[in-house]
Structures are given as C-alpha cells and as structure tokens.
Image (cartoon, rainbow, N blue to C red; front, side):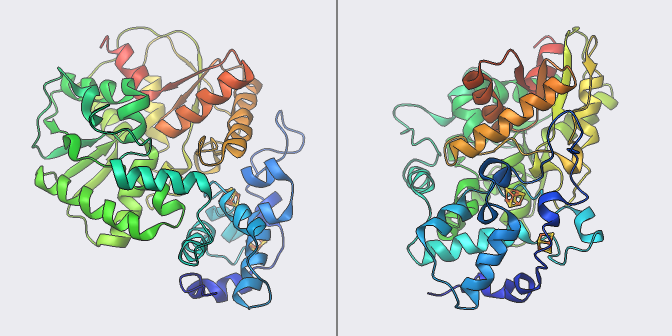
Amino acid sequence: MAFDLSEKHHRLIWNCQTCAGCQRGPQNPFGPTGPTPDRICPSYDKYRRLAYSAQGRLLVAKNLLDGKMELSDKFVESFYECTLCGACAPERMTRAGCCMQRAQPEIFRDLRADIVKMGKGPTEPYKKIGKAIKETGNRFGFAADKSKRTKWAEGMNIKEKADIVFFAGCVASYRKKEIAQSTAKILQKAGVDFAIIGDDEKCCGNPLVNSGQYDDFEAVVKHNINAIKKAGAKKVVTSCACCYSVLKNRYPEVAGDLGFEVVHSTALFAELIEEGKIKPEKSISGKLTMQDPCNMTRNDVSEGTNVPEPRKIINSIPGVEFVEMEGNGMYTWCCGRNPVETPDLALNSATRRLEDADAVGADTIVTSCSFCDWSISKAIKSTRSDKKSTDITVLLAESLGL
Ligand code: SF4
Ligand code: SF4
C-alpha cells in the first residue's frame, strides 16, 4: 500500500496530541447549556464514534502511515463520511494549541486520493458522480440531448464573451434554475457586462477533488480554464460557494496562476448596492437568518471577508427582520453539503440548522451556496418543517422586482 500523497503530512499527523480539542474545543459555538446542543464536527455529531472525528481519522492515518494498520473498508467509509467543513481546523484552534496548522481538510482529501489510487475508493456514490461528470460534464449525468446545461438562460440574451463570466455550476443549471436566472437578471439590471461559457461549462469538479479523484479533476480544471479564457474573462462570478471555493482555491493548485479573479456574487451585489446601481425596493416580510457556507468563510484563503457582504444585502431589503443563529461566520455549522454522496450525514447536519433557526425564531434560512440550499431544502422536506430555505440571489431578485 502506498500513501504517496499523504506521506508529506506524516510528521504533522504524527504530531496530533489526541487532545480532542477538535471535538469539544474552544471554537465550539454551541455551548452545552445553549439552545442547541454542544457540537463541533458534523460527522462526530452524527455517528458519535472516534473514527468519525478529526482526532480519530488522524489516529488511523498515523497508524496507516506508520505501517501498523491495514486499510479496512470500514476506515475507507469513515474517511468519506466527513464533509471537509474545516470546523475541526479554524484559526482559533491553532491559538488554542492544535498543532495541525489547520491542514485537516487537506490531509483528509489527500488520504482519499491515496485510497483512490489504491483502488479502494471512492465510495459508490462518488464513483457514480465521477463517471457522470466524465461522460456528461455534469454531476447528475444529464445527457446534452435530454437537458441542455444552459436551458436556464434561454431567452435571456446573454453574451458569450465579456470581461466578466458568470459560472452557474451544476445545481443552479439543472436543479435550482432560479438561482442562475436570478443572478443573471440582477447583473443585467445593474448594467454589468457579462457572459456565460454556455454548454462549454462543465461541473467545477468539486465532487472529484473532494473525493480524491484527482486525475479526473485535473481534466475538468483544464477544460473550464480554457473555456473561461476563450470568453476573454478577467473575472469569474459564481453564486455557489462550492464552485467559488474550488475555482478560487483548488484550481490554482493544478494550474498555477489562473489569469482571472474569482469572486462570489454576494461580493459583487453588495458593491452594486453600495454604488446605488441596484436598489432593493420591494418589501419582504419574515424573520430571516443566514447560513454561512464553510467554503466562503473558514475554508477560504481570504477567510472571513465573505461574512459581511450577505448581511449587507439582506439588511438592504425593506421589511426584513434579520437574526443571527448560533454558529455563524468563521464558526458556522456545515449544511451537510452532500445530500447524494453522504445522505445520512447531510440530513443530520442540515436538520441541526433547522433547530438552530428555530432557537432564534427565524422562519427562513438564507444561503449563498446552491449546496446549502439543496441540503437544507431536503431536510425541510424530510422533517416536514415549516421553515423555508432561499438563496440570497433569489431573495435579492425578488426585492428588485425581477
Ligand atoms: S487535531 Fe488538533 S485539536 Fe484535534 S486532537 Fe489533534 S491536536 Fe488536538
Ligand atoms: S472537516 Fe468537518 S466533518 Fe470532517 S472531521 Fe473536520 S469537523 Fe468533522
């Protein structure tokens, strides 16, 4: 067995003090006496077993790298039942003495890549999604003759070349078209000159890189970068935090300097509101709270900077009452991220968010990530909750009367 990619983390892994700070450390925003129970790691919260926590995974990794343990199917499963949310690795943990240099998500990704190379992974759902992306360019496996990727843009008269490219992503292109349409309508209303790369856009590769299917990820990165460059883009805008994070943080690991900037639509929209280019006027009633995506906060290289913008947008909408949930910004709770790849984990995690919203009396959870919206919407349906989930672009478009 060869742990080639993980070997570079060997010393760091060996240094883990097994202190369990990543399970109950000072970064825990959910105090034991708070309105929702004590928790940090979504995976440990669901399974309550050491092997399903960062500490346990590192202990297993150490023994695997030391050659003292064989990789069993059970360990493979536990490595994949992790959302890579980074709640075990925020900055505060480093100050509190965790010596892992916040590398846990990267270590877990590289371990998965080694597992894939050994032929023992990824798990079946990831394998299926990987195959779908390879064959059709999208995570759902829709063939182009049955459902065009850019069907959402029909009749919207969007250009093919401009300095700014809007990258819609799979979920907004196929399952939540209103997110892609709202983003485009807002940009048009503000007079922003933008393009889409049309059916040349492929899945950003998030499921591939996160499951360790690095070779297939590389192919997707090269394809999308070529298409973006062909459109002449200097800036890429996404409305999905997962696309944003992968394009901004993972693509340069494969391709070096991208030659274009990657921004989340909330940053651009907050700017447009500030400059007076768009003005939300239609009143929206309700008590709203915000689900900060891990990929726009602690997992981002420019961490924290994406926290104020969504709030600026929400607070500019007349009639809205905004309230913060426990666990926000850098200390946000993961939505569960992968409703298809790890459905039980996702459902547990997203249901926790419904409890958090309930604890502060919010009736609507606003998200800025297609995956957060998808995961929370699924939990609402399966628990028959009366809460609502809405993407921030849809909310803003509504208030703009679009
Ligand atoms: S990863 Fe850090 S916080 Fe967690 S057990 Fe190891 S040293 Fe402690
Ligand atoms: S990345 Fe998230 S789910 Fe994975 S071990 Fe860390 S806290 Fe748990």
